[in-house]
Image (spheres, helix red, strand yellow):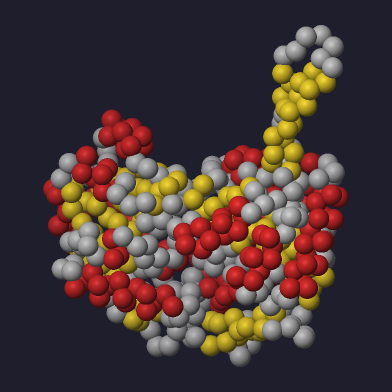
Length: 478
């Protein structure tokens, strides 16, 4: 095992770090080499029972803590994240593969989320209704209770903060299960919360066999909210478990981001923006632009320019400062992308760039561009979740909108046009929880993040993220 990965992994339950002694473990791999670099302890059923009991205690105590004290701990956590940013970013690259610049950007955004939620913790307002003299009707917003949160591996720093920060700000306790493939990043984030003074019963971190952990946490009457980031099939399975106790749910599921490029766009600027964003994190982003629908008048120039820029990207180990795209996060993903490429070309798609495994060892796949991809190709209907750009053409605005809304997903969409009237129509007509017009940024600490249709429901970030952790109560006094 490599010595570069120097994070000590463990379970964080009831304020204690528990080692792998006497527990089943699994290896954490380096996706740039495929080699093991750490042993991760997995929680037993008894560990999870202890975590649930602690979470109940933590909720009772934490909901009574003044908002300004909750805020102070979140602000201190943000400070520690920034101070330890280089170390945490390095861990993220070693276990997830993304380049260092992206990992450091993830640390910065996670710290900004903490600062935002710290301020919002002090703005949880109710209201007083108009009643006759001597009577009062109050509307109160109170924490929902202990939360079970499950994270994806693609943003191993930010996803953990995105779950914990609003729960803690609202007055909830939380048990978080990050991905076992990116455990070190989560452990380092938990140490920041711990060192900032967050009580151990309030936020706990467990790893384990996903099915066992989810069934035990969601079957417990202690758990009052489920927050999940991941695939549509897994999200649906978890919602069925959550239904048995009628718990609150926030589901941030997969997407298949359409990009509508109209012939009046600034073509070179659009290409520079989209190519960089498409291959960010090796395309392993739920809001990644994926289906590029380009108007007839510029389609050929767009395809040629996209392919040329893509072929110029340097792929390599994320720790190499020259790398512009790192490996995929695990051994499953390159094979999945290869299958989609083969299927698309068998249906008549034209390979303009990439299309092959890359690198010596590790989980690399070349950034790939396919043109004239027919709707019959699997990649046009299933989320690729990788470095695969799918190009097709359209004629009219109505055709573009219809294609954007064709699939059951509705997480993110992108539009590039200089026509102001068209921009307004697109914003109304496209079925997605987030739409970017002439840019690609969708995540801001003060803006809701979430999807519609099979991409889930509820929002993270923004005031909506805290509201998702609150119940509404009416109190009538005579």
